[in-house]
Image 1 (cartoon, one colour):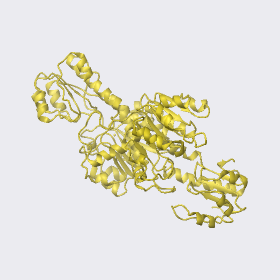
Image 2 (cartoon, rainbow, N blue to C red):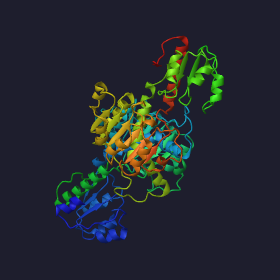
Image 3 (tube, rainbow, N blue to C red):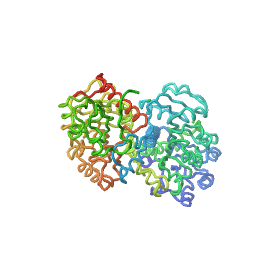
Image 4 (cartoon, helix red, strand yellow):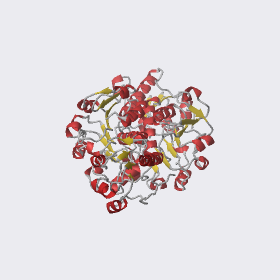
Length: 618
């Protein structure tokens, strides 16, 4: 409204509340006005236009959608319409990717497990989701937002993009690249389907039983367009029957969705309260554009964004094997009994291989293969003394962990868990300009502590989100790794002071233990978001709690803690601005399968006295 007041062009009558103006008030206040500035929640129909009278020349809506406006009635009366399409593109694409990742990697379900005591010891396939690497993504509606979504997903290792639209769009599809296919082909071939089309008579209910029945049972469905595009009863049945794996919705029919709706009962369905454009910067830009559209219309000038019509619509070797046949960790007494006389040991992150275990194994033990990138659970000095070789699996986890890191960052900064809770408890009422707004990545500075494989993979995935600058801190500069992102090597203090997002991907060493502490958080911006997917002990959790409670930083997302699992009464779990996951960085079925194969191959190579595919040199 500041722009309108400063223009001195008009007398302004403003509804001074975040709640929608009551219908009776709207009908009364519009009488005789020349321009109308409205929100998505206000239905501008013949009744309102009649009440306004012939003096009304322009309607400006602070929205990209215009389902709430009677276009035919406006056209009949010669009233110009301004709207705010392009301003929302980056925020909506960002939220779409956030929702896709939160759904496919089961972030909300994982966070709930962490809070309610479901986080036990590490298990190979617990909380596994579906990753984007080597996947096929189908986009329904390759407009501005569809292209922006594809651009952001491309660095995640997507193998192929498909799209369906009213007509082929080679001029935009070439840059991705994406192949134009039929709706049936899109359903059959896609691992992920993202709906970005406009709601038109042709797209009404287009995502229905026919579409869902052709989709893979491992497929993920995401809709951030309009609720009316989806037949929600058919979607519910597809999710309940296991026809598709999961769905993420930012839009529903109706809105808000009643809290007793059956979709809310499903663990494999994430529903958000239509917050795709909910970043402070985007909403401010929308408000400014809507105001400028209104002023231009009143002056008889060309609007910055004037509506001209409807948008276009869519896995044998000779070994004697003794195996612990349970998803639960092997009890120490069982491990000590079974390891005696063994030549090789394949272990998990949850198995502590210390002096006692090595003594029990005896002198036959020649190789240990751990199905993990980390080796905090191995007594390396004792292993080295005995001349035992160690295999591990560092590189395989990179893509899945980087993907989860970005998912956690987006879920945290765009307040996804909090939004889901609002939807379920009735907090979603009418649309309000700054309700549930978070912080977007566009024009931001991202600071990465530890620019190794995972740090670089995170930066690569974040770059298309419009990050303005990358900073990194570590033991020494990495010019080759940093060049791709033009990342600047800076002291830790400067990284804290200048970053809007701090992402921790460093190893846990004596030098990094407790690195992120009170002093560090004290230097961060009050609007900054802190993410840790490395090791819990890198962070002083008491200091982090105080920083979050006091408002020193805006929010935090943790996939690692000390201890693990974190006790359910831990104060961090009580905070709305702290998202905690149960160490699921590598938890995709494909990654865990590849991890197990490499761990076996390391073990076999060690037993044969050959070079391991991935050996930890002690």
